Length: 241
Ligand code: ZN
Image (cartoon, rainbow, N blue to C red; front, side, top):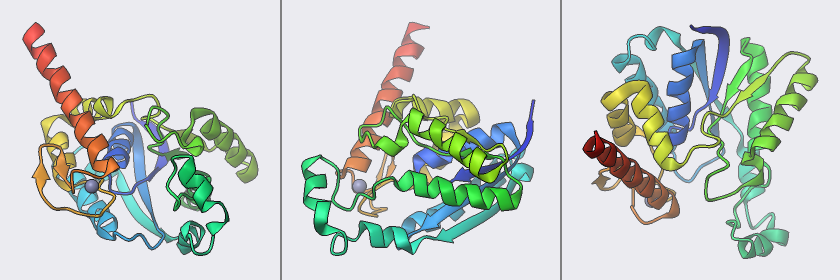
């Protein structure tokens, strides 16, 4: 059963948002994507988005007709808010918390607000994001209750139902690999390994079993560990059966 609504996926070109995009393409009649350009140090992310979209459309025939327009919003002001030269007052405090000093408080709330305004104009009534509460980072704007409250605020503020879907909310990184495998089999897993981008340092670099990246930054480590756990789990299941 295909949901007739149009979904707008917050799509960065990383592993998580690609999983969300595949998840949405499996469910909704029409799926559009939105990316945010906030002067990322690594424009490589924005390039990966286009490659991933193109690969999904060419390799997965049932999904191709559902994949609609892509939008990139220039949100340079987010860059201003993460600029420690500008916002130094609490930067040191943030680092003491274990959060990076470039952390933008409530960033996902801003992104969802922008996405909802775009969705309204595009006739979309579902927002799909890769926010995850089981993630190590524990950003409060990624928590389930925050996003449920945001769904309510957006639906009231726009005076139209706006559903916020977060398919990864309770998944581990290993579960996310399992999810995409179940959605698109080996072809989707291979696509994610080869074309999605995760590395904080913006390195494509060496090709590891889990994809490209420096291999040592927190994002690479998280992705590698999730991939290894998923592979170990699969092997265990195969041996047991
Ligand atoms: Zn890295």
